Length: 374
Image (cartoon, rainbow, N blue to C red):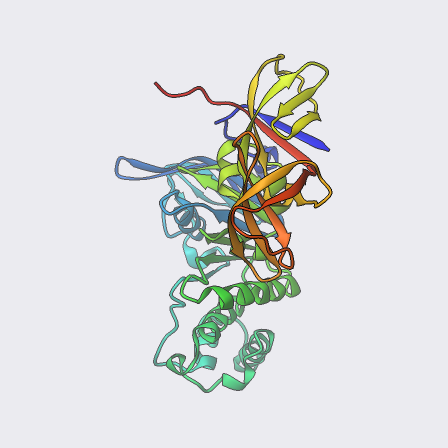
């Protein structure tokens, strides 16, 4: 069992996001970025870095500033403070703004932005400027093959499905071999099932091409399907930049813990000898820094609560949601606390029934309990 103890409410940005030497930048480095629309500051000292071939994601609720960051990286917006570096070259600083067309950045928009009067092949070829006609034709054929739409080269956008249009938009963005690909809510116009399928396909294409990319989305499932690294944004800053696994199992702030996945907080108390007491029992943990008696809230995910008919600990089924292979049960503990549990769907229990459970935590995450507001 590993323990992650944090002061509730403190935001954290990975140290790897802070870049000291511009000459040793990874492919993309954003340092202390600030941007405002009039008096409304929407980006407040944001930093991140992205290595070549990595797919990053800015994930957050509407209005958190994630699309503005993307627009600054693309060169569509000036920056009030901070710096943006691409391939070791400064492209944005107050008073410095390299034109978008000179940044070697590709863009895939939410609405695809295909030209309706051009064929699929002509849309893909639109951004190709280098080489002779034969070379451009070969690249056009290559990217259509990459997105598996070679047979549609003579079709027009209105003859394509939404998913096909999105893949053509991706092919057009990849055709000039950009150093960085930016994707702005690229699947939001698709239904949920197809969005999941296409996000997996797009990841495979980007990895096959070793393309560095950064995605903006409010959908965490989409982010988890596509990205290697994700930054959770809140009010113009990154709360945590990390792998999907660590964001889920080792959140650095209570906001991230609440935002990612599902879970509940159970109250606990720090005991002597590095232990925490919960309603479900006493658990060994490294509680250094917190004195005995400190009141904490412990994060429990549905996969931490296991159904076990042999367990003496019983919980009452309050609600259940069928998910095909699993039920997501909401359970009431004997002392009144509530937890959630993912249970194989052949265990079909009725509302009000009591079932045996046990706790199996690989990552115990606790936050100092916030004082009640007057």
